[in-house]
Image (cartoon, rainbow, N blue to C red; front, side):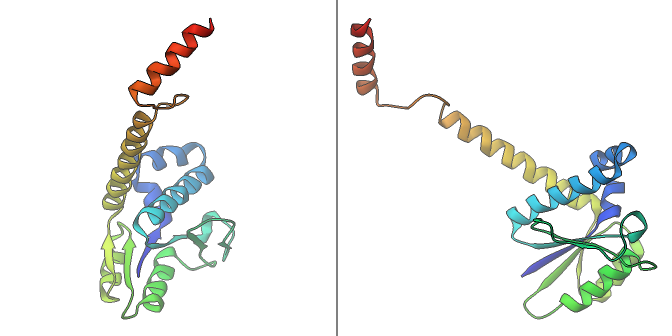
Length: 169
């Protein structure tokens, strides 16, 4: 099993769309990151845990409100980095590969020591953007295959229906 631990505010500060959104609506930026991580989890099959520092939210809160990803707000006087390090240690086993998404250089070295793999904010952003483009392309392809409001009949049958339609007028 693969697990991705995400330093939430690190991603918000590094991803262009989230960084811009946080200037006007910090909670919306947080929610959008969570939504993007839900899509990431659905596509990759990774278990995703997003960790936020408590200084901007209710301390110690763990949200499970219908979200498919786990969202953790650290305790008071605990940083997201500290919680991520603890999680990396506790989740590590022979059947699990832990990945940590952060651009914090100190945190990257600490998680390497725990045997986790790192993913920078830019790498995760590029991966999420690529997945979104693939989903969009797939949806466009599917929509073009099946025109809305029409049933694709073989041309012989379509000709028969067209003849009936014209005779009815």
